[in-house]
Length: 312
Image (cartoon, rainbow, N blue to C red; front, side, top):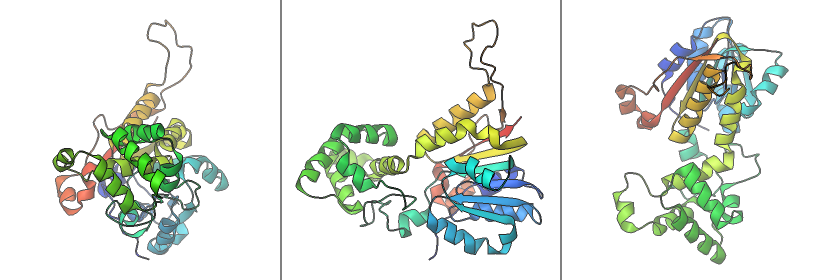
């Protein structure tokens, strides 16, 4: 199996993580292991990289790609939300750098066979971890019409969410909706033709993104993870988060600001009573984006946004 993926902003990640020997770093979303390999190059000969991915394909790929560094790598087939348990198993209290790359890999879109792409005719699965219980097909058939509207609006920011949900509801009464191509056609037929022609993206893009987010509980897990992330960072440790759409970036921005602010008491209180202290310093007042040269080589990098924080 060839795992297709082009990592984004590799140089920026290595620089901002301040990768050095004798330090411990975590790549929470290994993907094609491009970031992991770049980090390992900087932390050899005695640094440690903990690599995590919920997709078994990514772990198997990492075992091959990172084989030259195997003495310095600890791989885990898991979700990054379980980082505290992973560190406990390794008897590690805190780490020196953490990377989260929240993008979907080319492997998922082109080679996984799980229905991530509306351009393919594949089973309507969309699970990053095939051991998870709920598939996109399950949601399409089990969710009420109103719940589908909510998913498409909240996770996909889809203008035509209600029309699309209504069309899906009518179609599933007649036949099973089981493939990505079938669903994409239903979506295209539901949107007014004049609007579909005007859109710069495929009409199914936002709905497919929304379903993927719902299936994998992406936003809930990201938000929960960031609330406690400072607890696992050593002083001066760095956190780099690369997001690819506004919903993710909004969560990252909000949580990092909250961790930087510390106190959550109302401003009119004469004295702090919450006792929350600032735990990080945000190093990117403005979100970082890839250089134009990188976008030319890798168009998928166009929507990448990186935010960085340092533990106080």
